[in-house]
Length: 367
View 1 (cartoon, rainbow, N blue to C red):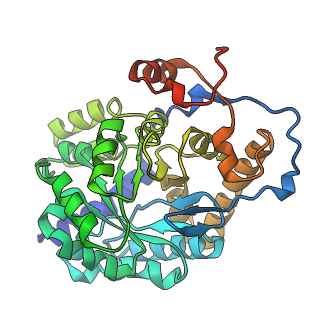
View 2: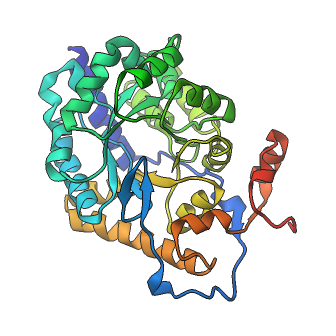
View 3: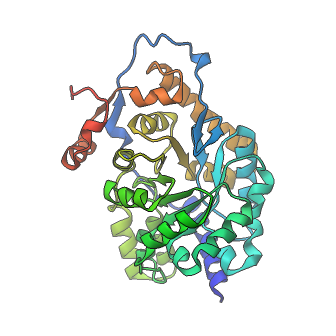
């Protein structure tokens, strides 16, 4: 079996595991946040404007369909449906890791279909930090050209790699490679975690390296490490299963904490990791995020029924939830959520106090 075949098989296995098994971790931190209700909002709900901008691109809604798949023949139709929904709604979309297409050009079409179906949408390409080291700037340029991408995400998935018996656990030189990439290409470089969050210290180094935006990919929501434990179980790999159970459910920086720490820096922030409702979106933006993204809620819809209408309905439901949250906080535009008042409680408050970031939140200290 070639490297391309192994990568492709892993892609489809992860999708089926995500549908079959419970791969979500309830640790994003949104339950520790509560908006201060504005009893006199003094705005009209129907006039609330959900449009926003990110990296100079305009979006009708502050949500993107997060990178999730591609690299296997079965994923082409999934990407086509998701891209059609993104195009019709006027939002952004990312593709899954394009490693499989670099290893085997026969998989390129499963990614190209996204641009075919969404000619006017913001689309970002996607490659892992280990593959950046392996393929260099030329490899990134290939994945950008493959889908005529507007930006590229370099994803950090070392937690997942550490669980996989075949994982790449040599992280030396990644920051230097990211810095070189930022100076070598014209497209914006986004660095994204994939479920373990990004701290202020790491974000600071990424900003210094020249990245254009950070996707926090926080702990909470889908855990790829938990998905790996199910794959290990099916293959009879007891050690990898144990590591996936231990680290997948109890390792990482929550989405809420990561948003606050990364937004302390002068760089756009994408909130990903356990975004499940419009209230989660509102809270993320109030904490400092500029836009949100999600994968599993839309993947579940499209895997059940390959129909763009179903995905559109799900996203419109989220946006109506967001609209109600904005109305009840007196916010007529998305940017105004950054001034909405929050109450922070529980473990999230304790961690933020210990880390010295609680003061960055506009809150009421009556908890």
